[in-house]
Length: 471
DNA sequence: CTGGGGAGGGGGCCC
DNA sequence: AGGGCCCCCTCCCCA
Image 1 (tube, rainbow, N blue to C red):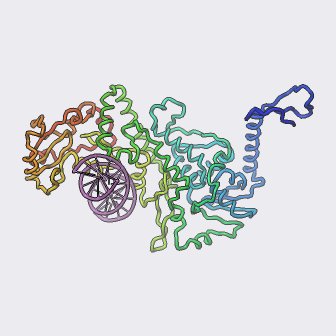
Image 2 (cartoon, rainbow, N blue to C red; image 1 turned 90 degrees about the horizontal axis):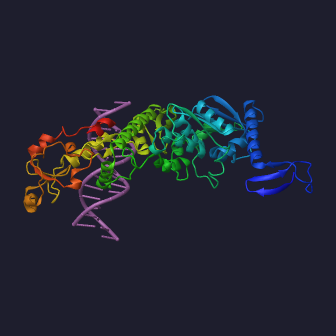
Image 3 (cartoon, chains in turn blue, cyan, green; image 1 turned 60 degrees about the vertical axis):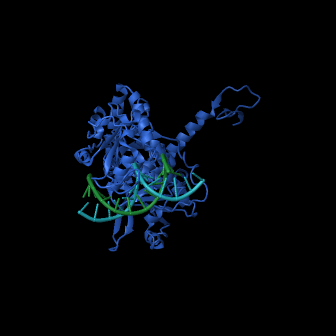
């Protein structure tokens, strides 16, 4: 077959038997041929795998044996590539105890078909396994699935990319799509704690023995900037919508504090009621789906950690977004908020949101209740008797008598002494904008006033968006 | 430009 | 498992 024209990706070929001087009678678009050929080849390989024909690699996952082809695994997984390139052995066996056979089935089906069978129940585990196996495209699909499931991008809500957690969907990809992208150079990734045997010569015990003084899983959990897990961690910010008051970029709101809050509040003031309702719905959906995601955290996040003094392995929970591990599932759930951007604890006084109740409480007591017994001006220690509470908008702090006199009460705008012991949340406008932003309302109160508004001021809501927005 | 302090975020761990 | 506390770190503002 002669190539007679090169049209980029689409090349035209003469049919066999046609001489070059003859008028071409049939032309083939090789783009179609290529796709068809790849598809057929993949189907053939998949059939061979299912019939265990020419399989030269065994993967043992929690006791269940999977047969596959080395070259296919090599082309699809950075981890397998790393392992398989270590030696020319004819047969390679791999043992995994850190993800389930069902998960590996999904992974293997994807490798051999390009179809990734994701659901809300397996996405975390598949993503964790994919990060293990260094399959960046699978990680990307899982990320997109989670992103869509969390409805982070409200604007894309109506697009067909929006998925419900209750749905099961499939992502398709060309086979080995990611394989050329990852770890082309010297791989510095510590080997995951999979237990490998090469012609049964490298057993589990030998692996464990090699790292006997260092837990293998611990070594795998070392932070590696080249690790796809870390790439994912860096990309985790993509999961958040900066427009969304419920979700803020991790660290992005730090101490831009008032400014960002004010901007949010101002934007909120501009928004109409319909938009507010949309935000309410979006928040509710995100909170619900985050909860659903947490509820479906699979056992894959549990990895064998250090051995305790009784030589029993202590279970640790691995974050699917980064290399961090924690002892308790609750701590992982808490940690996940730094990836999902979920902030379920809104401050009633300033609308600022927090990932933890304790942070909200600390913020409220510091900012809105003037609990710190120190003069803001001269930094001297004050008591509840000597420290007068100055209110600036919803912000409250203490000043000593001397500083109050030095500044002079006349210099402090005192818009409303009647309302000084109002609950800070009630100082908010309907749209949530801080009153102090537009007309700085200064108030000086005494301790009795503070005592009156302490404690009861802190109204804590946990993802009760409707109530919050209706205030 | 720099150092100090405030505020917030996150991890570990106890209750 | 959740709540809470302690500690450390980072970021930002301000003098």
